[in-house]
Image 1 (spheres, helix red, strand yellow):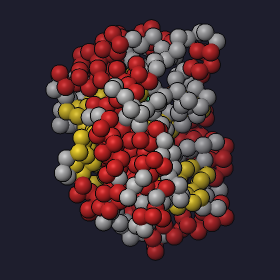
Image 2: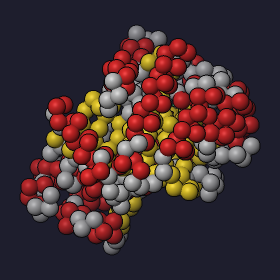
Image 3: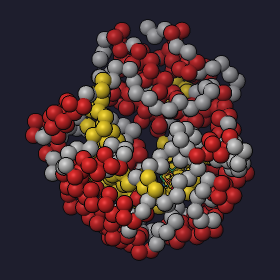
Length: 453
Ligand SMILES: C[S@@+](CC[C@H](N)C(=O)[O-])C[C@H]1O[C@@H](n2cnc3c(N)ncnc32)[C@H](O)[C@@H]1O
Ligand code: SF4
C-alpha cells in the first residue's frame, strides 16, 4: 500500500482551493528516475554494437522515430534554453557535411533497416537556416536511406525569418511534409524584447501565405509568460494565430533556466520580469478556453489542431515508449533499452565524425519500469491515463499502486477518477508534467517493495 506521508508537497500537491494556480509551486523539469545506471565510456561502444548490429537488430514492436539536430541560430533569443552555436555559413557547411556522414553511417546499421520509422523531426536550433539546397538534400537523404512508413510525418522546424518560397518549395521537393515554426508571440514589443526577428505584420503575412498554399500542415509554437506579454496581449496572440489559418498550434509555458540571457537582463532591470507561475496558469486557462470556443481539436494538453491534417505524430510518439534514433550534435534518443545523448560541443562532434565514430557523450540503461514511466508521461500529456494501457504492459499492479495518489489529486481537483480512466482536469492539464514526474518518483522509490521490476 502506498504511504503518501513519505512524500512531500512536490509530489502530493498542496491543499488549496485553487489547484490551477497553487497545487504546486512551479512546474518541475523532467528528471531521470532513480535506478537509472550510466554506462561507463569504455563500455559504450560494445553496448552500441550489441543494440545496433545483427544480434540486437531484430525489429521490436515499438514504434520508431528519427531525430536530426541542427545546432545553429543566427541570433540568440533571450528566453531560450536550447541555443548552442551562432551560425556562420562556413561552420554550417562543415557541420552539414559531417551530418551527411552520420546519416549514412546510422542508415547502414542493421537496427535501422530492421523496421519502419513513423515520424522524422529535424529540429534545433534553426533548421530553416540551412540553405534551400541543403534542406532539399536532407529530405532526400532521409527518404532514400531510412525505411519510412507510408504515412511518415517528416517535420522541418525553424522560424519564418528568411524562410523564402525557394526554401519552402525545395523542402517540399525533398519530402518534408510538415513545418513547425517558432513564433513565441506575434506582438512586436514582446518580440523585440525577446530578440525575435521580424515584426508582427511580417510574421502574420508570411504564415498566412504559407498556410494558404495547403501544401503541408503549418504549425506554430507560442510561449506564454514572456516579459511584456500581458493576458490581453496573449489573447491577441491567439487571435492572430486563428487569422493566419495555420493548421496547428503548441502553447508552451515559459521556463527560463540555465544560461538563458533573460535572467541577467531582468536582474539588471533591462527587462520586466516574466510572468509568475500563477499568472502563467491563468494564461494557460485562457488558451484552453479560447480553443474550446473556436472548436479546435485537442491533440494533447498543449497542442491543438484546426483540421485532421495536423497529427503531431513526432511530439506524441516521442513521449511514448517509441524508440528515437538520434543524429547530430546535441541530439538525444533512446533505443534498445538505453537512453543516449550525443556530444553537444561542436568540435567533439566533428572529431568523432572525422574518425567515423559514434558521437556518444552519455549513455544510460533505462529503468526496468521505463515502459510504465513512458506510458504515464504520454498519458498525462494526452490528459488521460487509460487502465488498459497498463494491462497491456502487464503493469496493472503498478497502476493500482498509485491509487492513493490519484485519490489525493482527485480531492485537490487535479484529476477525476473513472472506472477505467484517470482524467486530468483543467488544473491537472496545466500541471501534467509535474503529475507524471510525481508518479515516476513514487514508483522509482518503491520499485523494491512492488517487486515488479
Ligand atoms: C528549440 S526551439 C526551436 C525553434 C526555432 N528555432 C525558433 O526560433 O522558434 C523549439 C521551441 O522551444 C520553445 N522554447 C524555447 N525556449 C523556451 C523556454 N525557455 N521555455 C519554454 N519553451 C521554450 C519555443 O516555443 C520554441 O519554438
Ligand atoms: S528560440 Fe530558436 S532561434 Fe531562438 S535561440 Fe532558441 S533555438 Fe535559436
